[in-house]
Image (cartoon, rainbow, N blue to C red):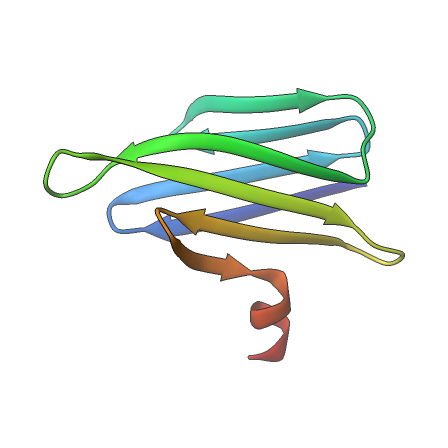
Length: 89
């Protein structure tokens, strides 16, 4: 099982890869965090530079449920993506 989410945020591309034994966060093609090993939930952290040249934190929450992996992506304090919201729309 491999889940991939690719989100465009401003001029940046955020990519999350989740397999049963590895979780990775890529920003603009650069690996910023990875978590090896099997876990039921994971947190990944990274940074991106905004239009003003300042860095903003990226936080990714991954959770394994019975049928799928849940993913939530935050930039700064804002939720920019959630699998729950994506499936409703």
